[in-house]
Image 1: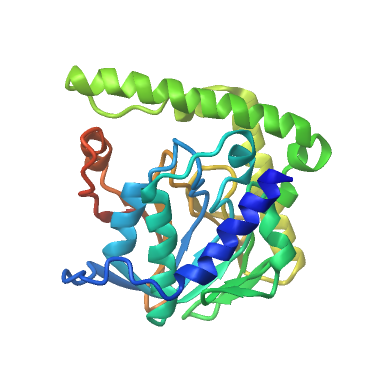
Image 2: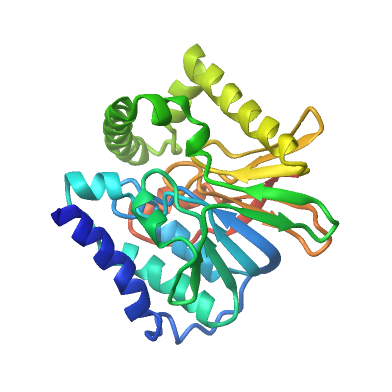
Amino acid sequence: MRSMKREDALLGSWRAGSHVDADEDEAEPPAKHYRTLWISDLHLGTPGCQALALLDFLKHTECDTLFLVGDVIDGWQLRRQWYWPQSHNDVIQKLLRKARKGTRVIFIPGNHDEFARKYLDHSFGGIEVAEEWVHETADGRRLWVVHGDLFDGVIQCAKWLAHVGDSLYEFTLKLNRHLNSLRARLGLPYWSLSKYLKAKVKRAVSYVGDFENALAKEARKRGLQGVVCGHIHHAELRDIDGILYANDGDWVESLTALAEHADGTLEILQCAPSFLAARQSQRADARPTPVHA
């Protein structure tokens, strides 16, 4: 009951914060303007969230429409232990400010922030809440926008197992932070343990492939040209049997977003890797750069 009140209070703070100007003194112009941006799996409320990198990304990009494709707030983690530093609140304020300044912000809840699904078709500080969306690109392609957890067999058939896996993933991230702190002191670059495990464990590789194929198949069934999702923390942009599959990644490890240019071209943006080293000293100096056309 306490956790539900906390989650409702967080959403309530979106309304309250919609009149507060965070970063109102920004003088530096945005580095790039996009027609559309998609970000997901921010996992605000967890130590693994790269909030400073995300704030810097949001500061140096502008767009006509911004999709928040689920797992923005990690209700699972907040139920276990409350964690909400100022930087996470700053992210919410930044999103509210973008909505107030004219960006259309659409929030599609995921499994970690499923509590927000009871507010579908409502607006919080100008941020619209929707179950899913069909986005038409500038070149006429119709893309289904959905978090993707409803196509995850573990979530649907054994939710308890998903919670166990989430705890193990959080432990891996914690171990990874200690490991990279040591690597930084040795002058070595950032290295992701969980990404390494995902790439090496056959079952994980098979899971990703099954997830991608299931979403592409559903998009085809709906008569759409593609799908944009999140959920699995694996940024990707590719063709699956004539259907565009796009995953915007996450802001825990990969620090990625999906962007649409004025002509409808899509690409994955990634924060400069140098940010991860800088984060050790709490400096936010990342910039978005394209990594996949």
